[in-house]
Image 1 (cartoon, rainbow over the protein chains, first blue to last red):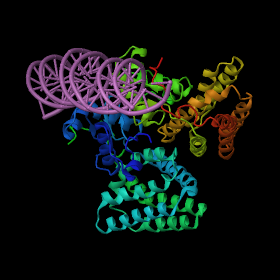
Image 2: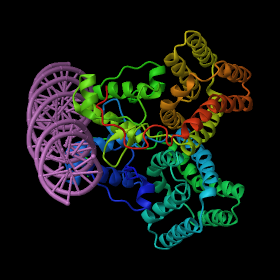
Image 3: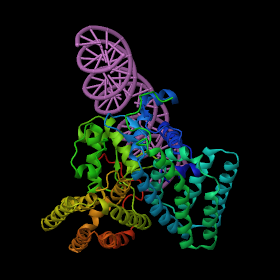
Image 4: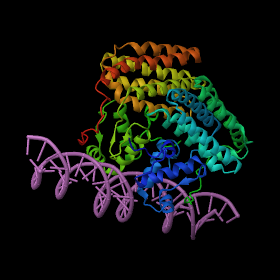
Length: 245
Length: 245
DNA sequence: CCTGCAAAAATGTGATCACATGGCGGCATG
DNA sequence: CATGCCGCCATGTGATCACATTTTTGCAGG
């Protein structure tokens, strides 16, 4: 077993980080995925280091890794921020999610066991529960976990890291639109996906996954369009250099 | 314009790195892509630093970034190496390349100008020339560049970084099989792709790209299968700890 | 009151050091 | 001669320092 950088999949299956850098990375990744970091806001190494109570070294490497995953963007000023979102980029990200996740789901089918399905049902239950409790952090997390369990069924999948990169890019803008979503849309798609899994119906699974991504995103897209009137979403100009915290 | 970290696309369009770390990263990325680093061989920070005549710091960050891009793998011993290849993983990588690159090509169509086509023709010419000269480095590089020019036609494409990650994962094993390839197979597919581009025929382009990837890979797959008799391709066990060089 | 310049503070980058971990070989013991 | 233990060496990790670049602040001149 190789050391993961504590990816989402690793978190789902429960691993503990051995290095400080991995803890910092996992923490930042989580914050980005859950939309807890303001897009456009500049992240400073020293600021984060002070906030987390570690030296600059682990933070530097974590930031570098997140830049490589496109969760963060290295500007020309050498400063790091969450990349601003545009309609074109958002459209690209969703298109990439759809082709990758649909294919990943189909390729996971041979590895799907009852245990995998059970774990997905568990995540789906968490989603329901979080929705009733208005716990958006948990809602988003479980939503990703639902998918991660499926794609992660394939032992050394090359798909999952790519998909996680896409999630990290979309994540910061999910939360901002999530409150405007009516609420019950994804559950149906998840049920569809689970039903397809039980029947081992690959084509139906593809359709359910694609629909899930599209549905969940339609509202957000319109939210983006509304915000678009103001130009780029957060960070058109170099954000204020407020030390993060 | 944001600092790119000197990706393949950035190299194609010609940019100069401003930091040491970016130079190291670009150099390592190139060596990996061209298959100049032995799979399974452990890369040491100090070894690379000494080899490149820089301190450990830029090397550390470059390695971290390459780990994030899955070009390198962080083992439990905290050593870094090129991930061993298995048939399953190779199959995954090719499947991912096909769905991503076909989609990226289709989405690039609206942005295709005569200048883009001209640049692709130029890369294609380089491929021919390199093939006659038996210059495999140039051959592989131009081959990737051919695709990069196309996908890079889209301004802020989210696809290109994902695709580059896949190239980096496949690269180390391309060269090892390339000598066994008959030779003239891709040229036809590239001609097909160029013809489709001139006609602005998106569907034909998809087919050509997919065929290009499949054709170029079929022979390599069989090479892998032959090597598979020996177990994993390079690095089944932790590689020898020879300092790189 | 606005503008532009210069000093000062903040930040990223590169280098180096101290320490913990892991790998390797030698050595003793059966 | 084989095997297991112990110590040394190489390596990754974290911390810190020096320096160049960038950003902010303060002030003078219009």
